[in-house]
Image (cartoon, rainbow, N blue to C red):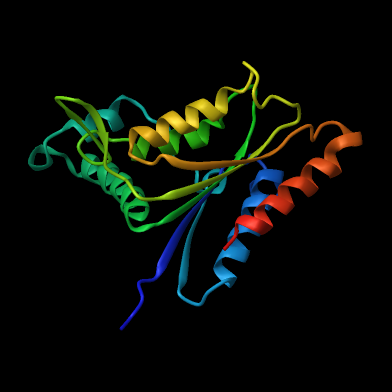
Length: 203
């Protein structure tokens, strides 16, 4: 009897790529997760280095066009989106490295979400409301902030991430926060706490 390979999609969104604090935490978690068993596969996205395109009118219309009426350029746009969606369909675990920029998510991460949140593909409209189609997945979000915002009105990220993932059917979302990193007197303690959490979760 063969066991199904577990798959994880890692999405880093720091402007500093692998040098960012959120990326470092996500990378450490993923390394431990992958080392825990031989049958584990990881797909990694560094959204800064990949230059993921932001949504514009042409891309949006590509999604809306009927498959048989799409131009070659539109087919390429949809194929790129389909690739990202299929990665998530096949994954059982998703890891997001999430820095805070100007009280919001990085625009590159928003662009990624715009490629995977597609009506008819990852969610659909029904008579009882919106139904997400990417169910049964676990998400770990490593959120790093210079200030301390969790639980305050300034934390616009947590609700947005939960709502966006919920739209596509993903509701099991766990946040690991490392806050106050701009304050030298608490930075080390905040990172140590985040590391302790990821050590316990990476199984």
